[in-house]
Length: 631
Image 1 (cartoon, rainbow, N blue to C red):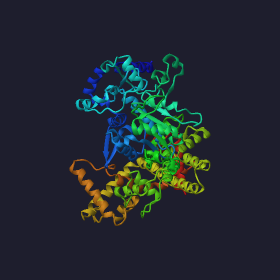
Image 2 (image 1 turned 180 degrees about the horizontal axis):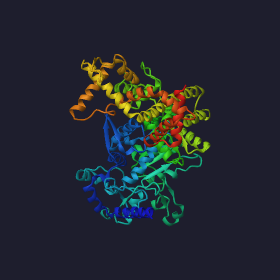
Image 3 (image 1 turned 45 degrees about the vertical axis):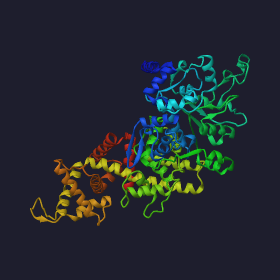
Image 4 (image 1 turned 30 degrees about the horizontal axis):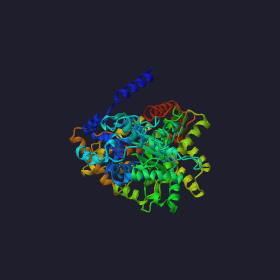
């Protein structure tokens, strides 16, 4: 009954939001809330902004796209700031078709779908409310009722510019139903709905020989001609084309570059002049955002054709590349799995990360910058610190290739291979090795991979495997070190004592003999080398640790095992290096003794409780790391 209650609540809410009144009463609403009279482009822009905007590192993050689009912050910011924002200000870009161009499965359709769903919800809010002439199949803007000769006066009084003319049907209705009294014309609040064809339309081209322009602009209703006596009577016309129904909102034009020219010219007239031709009528005004999407190869063919020059100049192209950040790619896979029928299968931690590493490597371009390989570039793009490089270097790398991310492996391929693994093996759990193996096996059948690319991609699988090997060792390392936590704390305290003495040029006192000793350089270096601290960098690192220690002391806080991330990693690695023999024995012994078995069970429990594994994937991980250490 819960779902039925929600359906009932939704229906009641819609009834509560409904409004109907005269044009005179509508003008009172406009006076109080001028935003109800905004243009379609302005409505989309304010809808996006209403969800919130966060500024970070001189970049704007639009929350509207937060849970649907991952890793495309730069492309989204450009879309909003270079198209929707100026279009909302009535600048010339609103007179262009918005064309999203990018590789397959890159997020173009998702962006359009989010805009549609967003408009549906936004029209149900106070700030997004939309009003139309009641009974109009095109949901016409009531302000079109204001005669042309009064529009300057209206602007002076209300501060709102009116664009467009009253449609033929409403011109007739105004005379016949209302005797020319615009103040009495009925106005109602409407709610955008793609399903009900209110304010949102979708057009998909088919065979040019069979597809009729009426799909866009409506058609004559021949059954009513005898009643009304003429094809030019607007009552004998069905205003049910996509351009009619999408008025006041947006229309998605799928596969736009495959369309016949006669369809495209109607779009150009609409975007450039704000009107289109239908039947035997004067031009019909419409206010709507036209958004289309295509891939790069189709777009290149389109602009290469001289016949399309006029069209090309009236299209604004927004590149939508693939995501180039490993952490965001993981989120894409998680979302796709959640929405699929394989959501109940256990995917071991880092399995999706291994796949993401492979995918991102295929999309990156080799930099000419010295000292940067693809793996370092991948890490920098994902916000990781790479010794010798900083944020400025990362920004320079991003500017090096304008088309980076426009090619490579798409997310759908990865999910298809994961699905194939699950179905073929019929297992309740898959790990990183299963995923990488499946990705590798499927490359031969991938339709768009050349021989040269195939060789490169096979190499990227090997790189992703090596990256995963390090991750796997760290996972087991953390779980083992946890079992030796006291040892880790003792080792860290010992290191800190030596660092303090080294930085302050003091001696240490032997706890047994009381004898003074110099700081243990061998101990400090054995820890620092675990995280790549060079001989030249050791002094700066130790001073950094001492400053952190002092800061904690000033605040009355205790500096513990988790107070410095890199030091914690160094301690873990050092301890793990000392414990390697124990790990090898406990993970490879066929008949572990009682103490070994206890240690294995502790580590497995830790992996399950703290790291997200299940018993199968935890045991697989331990065996795999054992085999790595025994090589």
